Each structure stands twice: as structure tokens, then as C-alpha cells.
Amino acid sequence: MPNSISDEIKARAKAEGFSVVRFADARADPDNAARLGAFLDAGHHGDMDWMTDRAHWRADPQSMWPDAKSVIVLGLNYGPDGDPLAILAHKDRAAISAYAQGDDYHDVVKKKLKALAGHIFQTHGAQVKVFVDTAPVMEKPLAQKAGVGWQGKHTNLVSREFGSWLFLGSIFTTLKLPADEPEQDHCGNCHACLDICPTNAFPAPYRLDARRCISYLTIENKGPIPLEFREPMGNRIYGCDDCLAVCPWNKFASQSAEMKLRAREELKAPALAELAALDNRAFRALFRKSPVKRIGRDRFLRNVMIAIGNSGDETLVSSARAALDDPSPLVRGAAIWALSRLLPKEDFTALSDAHARHEPDETVRAEWHRVK
Image (cartoon, rainbow, N blue to C red; front, top):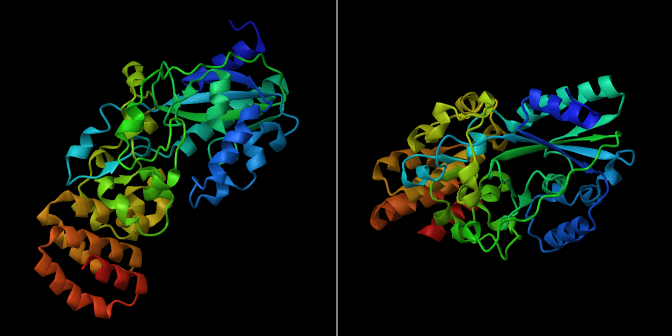
């Protein structure tokens, strides 16, 4: 039987399905503000302007809620059932990041957080607030402070027990709970995560330039994919698992026990040709309850066209040609690049001559002339 409030909360968290639970005090780590400031000052956040909003809240939990005394940091294992990098060899198939092949983790984690927070309020009379990663909370430094894991050289959280595969959530509370010991950095001399990055997104260990990160480019970036990153994207159409999957600490990882986070069969290795044919209704149906749905069909098809261009598969020419008539300029522009890679030069030139002068969008016309 639990013999303290903290033991009781940890037992209840495990009963709700969380894989790990630790406590930290709500006081700010003085290094957080400096690290966040350096990241933002360098422009490494790209177009993610939401990171600059309320930056002081991110750096100091008590700035967001002065009454908070403790933070309950929770992790939910989403370990995949195989090697996430194996799909990269199958160029006619789409690589979707492991975290996005099941239900949206925001919904799954938040439901469990709310259940646990409600129990704490009812049982212990404490005020509580729950946060997933949509709130201005620096979850990874909090998780390291609480002993859940440490931020590796790729800036993601690493756990000795679960490797790279933990979703994080937190409950701020007015309860004063005994803090757990922080986790130490166990990366040692390893730099596998830095070496494998297809776009060299790490200017230095423990520093990420999001503008070069395939996860940022395929999800947060709203415009055309910059030319220098198109070929390195390969067939990655939503996110990138390279730096996570290569971590040696994954030898201790296990498949997620949460069924809602397990990969759906239709999202493990979907055919690029089938994805290219999705209209908005079909897109929303396929990615119902999935985080992929949030980027919208146009950005998604932009990514699919880039993957088609990287496939080297001439059978996909028809998919790219069909996209030249897509209502979205974003999709049409990416389809032009795909065709420039798949068609013989003379065939592409003839296609350009037939289409470019009728293209209503200036950016897409420029794409025709640039790749010609």
C-alpha cells in the first residue's frame, strides 16, 4: 500500500497507463532562459513564432502559475514494433514518423493527465493544471530535472529505460511533493544522432537549427520545401525518426503497451501512388484522429510529391502529372520538381512549354522556369 501522497500519486499514474512518473519543484532552472534565448536569437525556431510568444513562461513555470509548488512529470512509452528506418529503403512507400502512425498523442496523453489530475484534486484537495506540448512549458528540461531522462545531443529526451520513445505531459500542482533526483547526461562520446541527420540540422551538439530539420520542413513549414532539402528528404513525408532511432539507448526500449499509440497497418508503409490520389475528404478520413491531419491535405501532398521525385520510380510519373492540375499551388509546384526528376530532359521541357504559360500562380510559374 502507498505510504505517502507521492507514492499514492505514482501508483495512480501507473494505473492510468503512464510508463514513468517523477516529481520536480516548480522553480525555474536558471539555465533554461539562457538556452531558450540563444535558440530564439539565432533564429533557429524558423517560422514557429509561437515559441517567442510568452517565452518567459516557457523558461519559468512559476511565471505561468505562481501558485505552483510542484510539477508531476509523466512519460508514456510509444515504442514502435520495429526499426523506423527500414521504410527508407522502400522508395515507392511513404515514411511517416513513428509517433504519428497511431492516434494523436495529444488526445491520448491529455485524457490520462486529466483523469490523474481530477483524482489528485478530489483526493488531496490540491489545485492542478495539466499540460501537453501545446502549452508554453519546456517539457524536456522539466523531465530531466525530475529524473525521467536527459536531453541528448539531438536535443530530444533520452531514457535509460525507454530509449527515445516517450511522450511527455505534466501536471502543475499546489501540492508540495518531494522532488526526485535529476537525471544525468549519459550520451558520453556518442554522436550517432548528429552524424545520421540527412540535412545537417545540428550546428553543434545539443543545438538544433529547426529550419534544417525534416520534421520542421514537413510539418511546420507552410511554403515550398527549400530546394537544398528536397533530395535529403527522401521518402519522409511527415516527420523524421533518424536521430531518435539511431540512439544506442533504444536497446532497452520496448513496444508501447498503449493500443491507441500503436501503428495502424495502413500508415506503416503507405504507397506514394495511393497518397498522391487523396482528395481533402479522403485525406481527412485516412488521418482521422491522427496528428497528420493538422497539417492539412495541401502540405501533405506537397511532401508526397517530393517523395515521388526522390523515388526514381517512373511508374509514379502519372501521379505527379495528375498533380499538375491540383487546386493547390503548393502541390503543383512540388509536382513540377518531381517530374523534373523522373522525366527525361526533353520530355520535361516539352511539358514545361505546354504548361508554364497557362499557370496562374507566379510562384508555380517560377518553379517551371527554375527547374527547366
